[in-house]
Image (tube, rainbow, N blue to C red; front, top):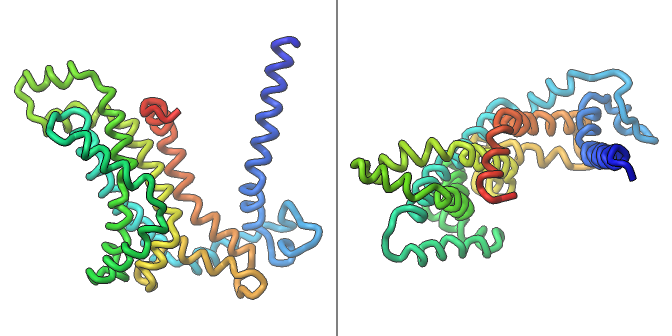
Length: 274
């Protein structure tokens, strides 16, 4: 078979599978602009008869700016605390010689083998005993503490840095904090961007823990607000408005990924995750 035909076959396969994967997303966008009559019509319509832009206004009013802001506070808090934990810990485990390094490294591996549901109830009890239920601290800290993957990821990246670079800085009189902040961190920007995108997406989509730890409207996040919209035939909200609310919830994640796409690709390629 000629190379041109092979290449054409590959591209055709990629396009077909891409359309199959994108079909639910395209229907979500289309459904968010449909009227109630369009969306319940049988056979189903793929495009709205007349775009209903008011669906997004109603969806935004249902979600409320406070809920959207709460989601950014929750995700931002988780991300900042995890970076503050993972970056120094990963650098120390990879470059700073001290006793018990292997044991500490092994301790970071243990949480990776523990199901999330196993620690859910103990985490809730501890948070409740500390009086943090219904507060942003109670929502953020338990999630931010689950940083084992981040520590191991940054440890792998910092371990790939040449030891001669670190030794030269130490010979010039730099202490470990200066080596970390002035040499290691600037080189780690791609992996930091990649980890930030992954953590942002993960925290943004969390549902169970924000539901348990932030039951009131003052700390309600988007995933908790969206859940009642899936109430089926007994829901008082039109499915098209539910679709519009889902699109609004999806936009921040999409924007973050587009903005950091180049750094995300470099970070994944440089971290050994390929």
